[in-house]
Image (cartoon, rainbow, N blue to C red; front, side, top):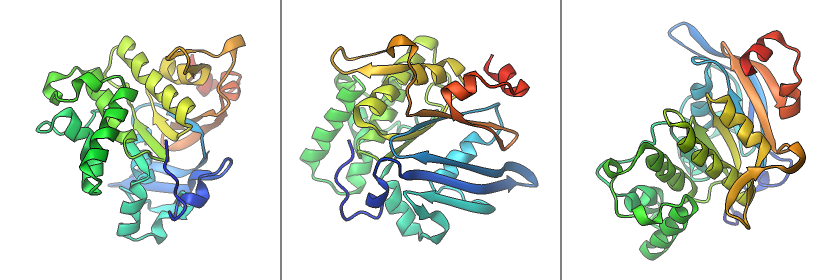
Length: 278
């Protein structure tokens, strides 16, 4: 879905095998409480990285660091190959034009209808109104909510609001999507609908993403399913296959306790990890 970025500072990073997100020995604490402790990992272009771990382990803080909303106490964070600490506030703002963010609570504007909520970023960028409307319709069709274009958030279910949030995140055709617990608080059936949209974005547009989830079922669905564009649905990968581009990162008490593939995780002999995933 990403536009051509020949003149963009992120264009050099948008190639297979290139790192999109890099954390090197990143630490941060608040009021004497160490939230992240020397965290290091890399998310490559086109990769989906699932972030797991007990509540309070620093996952949401990590997400805010990746979006430039917080600064670490120490360590290096590179997004699209650029060190955030070397970027001005304006450059970080411009970088965010290439990042979509999906919040757990959806974070929609109650006073705006669905169309204006989804269009918000493009309106800030002064895109032509006709193009904005067409892009809104395209994004809502992707999340199968085009019929709700005139509704307000108060008229939508929790799952529908989350789908609008995804439409808003993808309308700018981002090169990186950050999902902060997109299925949090939703029932299992609605959660599966949201995960299907994440799989669809991954498999149709190959968008790099970092996704927090507290539901192991959602995580392993992402790792073992693909989107069938011909039948317009998510389905298991044949022969018990695994999505090679989907990886796991697990935090516990602010430290990385696992960084690797689905098979490495399911075959781990680490006692803590086995208790956690079982």
